[in-house]
Length: 449
Image (cartoon, rainbow, N blue to C red; front, side):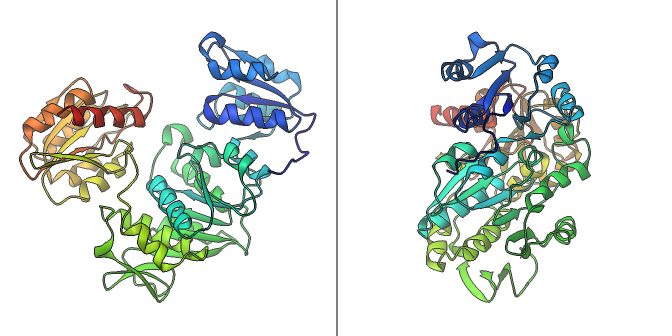
């Protein structure tokens, strides 16, 4: 890593821990900063904070005292999940203290270039596909970011021979200042996380930050089927590469005569791709474009697409029992993601859905429920989902306490040839710490059958 002098002898506050905060605090300590960590969880219940304390890092736990900002901090590294209306962040910005996220820190110390992937849906699948294509293509990639591996920890180990493939949320992108990916991908843009960003324009603006520092020497791969993406691309200095599932572009990545194309090259026949779902073609096209820009061979790309079955919790095939196929799509935390999951299957579906109530209705899901023969609900949104199901003409509707109890009920309501699909259309936080926990419980319940 680059042993930068930017933070040496500077007072830095790391606000909020989790994996990214722990990594950022340790890294800043190595870079010679005077680090203070502030986390809301009490020290006695906070092993991460205890570990930092043992390294000689100052730790303040239990609350976020606003008077802490009077201690002369020159930079704040905040956990991406902390919103900008948090009093600590408002106070810092009022004092003109720069606020960054750990992704910015990772970029500053990295010897490796970045491929950054963002968008409303498809980020994890696209990030994984790009990584696998570069890996098979012997380009020495590393994977990082919102996908589960902390960016600054990966960047510490990276060399100039590596490429860091990083999944980026809008929360992370809000806190960058110099971060500049060699290749940026925006998979798509829809309304999401408005409880955090406030408005659609703020959310889309956060996503657009991925290309804000790019130059004419960089690339922006973007969805040519969405007008909002096309408009966004007008404001970048990067070379724009479009992908489209509907248009014969003749350049970029697109579909022609049953082939995935890049420019005028035939890359792979669609019939040879094993990843299910029409919506995944967007992810495949954008990842093919990135791989080709990195010099990956068509053979390596074909090898990935002809074997890759998907990432965990994202239309993940679990098992088959008595002719019923079980799929885990716990990462579908919004209506659009569930709509796309439902569109991936032509057979009748028993849908398991529900979770955190963010105040929205599920009317937008109704047109996508035509193939749903039964609905099992759980969580805060159960009543709203049931209303949508009734409007869609679904007769078999059952409410249960949780995902685990939903699985045997779904099996009872299903028949040979049906798909049993967990695709909640909601965040998990009303009942489960993360969507991964929710998905793992579903997997375990399926295996119990």
